[in-house]
Image (tube, rainbow, N blue to C red; front, side):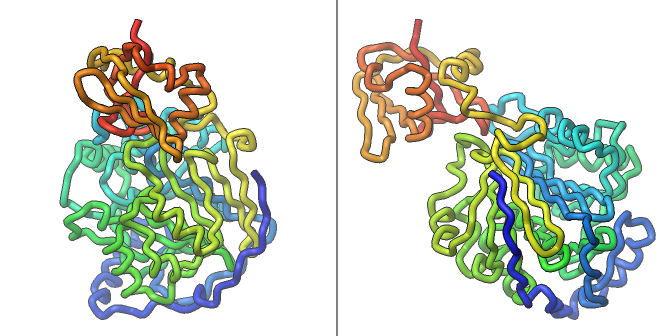
Length: 427
């Protein structure tokens, strides 16, 4: 899908965020950071943003890294910023399948675009579905990384986070915690306003670095895994600095995020949800989708649209999405190329045993319920049922047959809701 629309020129974009007295010390510290920071920093409101660069767009690509987050930003001046990197080899995902967003998505995309230097890598918070791929990226010495932003939250130190910091230290890459309420210059024609960072958070999601990137009259708000308390804090601190044309929806579309007051303040034309096909979290939630629909927000999703590229000259936004449309390397997971049998074969070593199906029922919504001999039910989501039946295995014909119930092995491979199970016909 390709669309070109005129961005709404929100007057709020020119309104500076009020200065907080408790940040004066932070501003002084920021001046010291400037001595080695790769990108310019200035107090918000110090000067008006420069006009858009003629003929040079800002390009934002929301990468399909499965159940995780990653966005690549290319500024008109040639600066390149990567916000998060999806899952990696070191992961927190339960019984995770061996999926590496860096090797399978990020590196191929960077090479396709001819990018060898990242001016900034933003690790929004220390969850592996955001920083796991960054750990693997740091291991690629052929790519230069000039600076890393880190939330500075020490509430939970996962192995991926420890490796990220140690690898950066080994390579001599400075790690900086950006300042809430400060605006950073990403080249001469793009600005990044930090709307939230919370090093003292008890919940890692609430530690998320949230930034709004502006080029001309167009803004993108990256909400990381911001939850409701995060959104409330942002609304309290920066009520007039949220209006954006594009919202990267917080926490993969979880019901814990994108509450109506926050969405109303952002007032986006587009929303992008980064989530994995048939993920085991139920993302995005129906509640969030209904809220976005009620607000007449156009929704793009990486699980269905794959990579989503948005180009802006500072006035209009051109959107390119869809697996068939994208000229970028193949994304994380394409349901059109996978059937139940191949998935079950993939997870065969996790088989828990055989069971006979004694009843099969299908609800009006399309959800299928299979009752197994000896107790226990398997619930198959509507879309999963369609995929299964498309492979030639009719759910209603399973009664009386024995099936394998295999353990679920990854956030992108989920077909069965209850018990994180997968099934196939037993031999």
